[in-house]
Length: 349
Image (cartoon, rainbow, N blue to C red; front, side, top):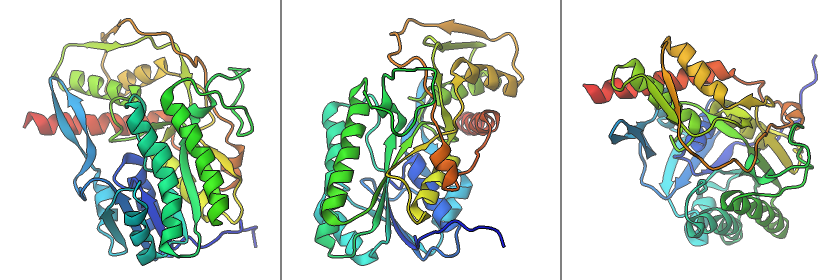
């Protein structure tokens, strides 16, 4: 008989930020396991079955971002319940915990880059503090907490060409990264105080259908899809594409988070990434190849110099926990392009 990695029960799971891109995939991954008894998702918005909470740009308008059918079907599972609740409110979240008595919490709720500092502080630092206060108010045994952080916390590193290791120093270069780094410390400190073991998941650059188009990959997929449908001239406009990044499909990231939740003794910090350094210019190259378009002009608008020129992660810890090797860049971008073409076709009807 082959070696089986020791695992712990993750049968009753609370997922915060459950209607976000990553949160929905975590929910679906948990529900794919027949041993999962109950999953409760929480978030500030009312339950949305067919759409994400964000909108996507299409030409001169915006549209609610559709939730793919496989995720809608997963959330129809009788074991799943969504509760609108303020993650930053210990009383509201504590009531949910008292009812569920979770053995695991995946804390994916967060404000994203470019949001105002007040929102970054409240949704990242404040809500993390509130989560652990809720554990105390619920009066339930302390669950394991998988805290979703960001690979951006590393910031400026001494060896830009080297893979970022979880033991490397963190020197954030923007307020978003600073808020996530502070939230990591809050999670570890408060976890020790309430007796909840904490694992920090530093998630790198996500790819996948439904990704917000504030992210380059989604913006490019939308532009290329609009050209392919004949909705716009054959011109793609971007800022300078001079950096490298580590891209990971959201479905693989979700699988990694669930692997961390089920591991018997995961490390305190784990990179969730592909482990591959990719020039961001490659995103456009692949999307154009997938679309079959030729003769597309690439216009570069002025942009500020990037603070972090190169970035990719060491994924040895993730692989040791059973995290998947992952989808290829081409497969992820193909799914994103198809998603945008479907959205554009729907809007044209």
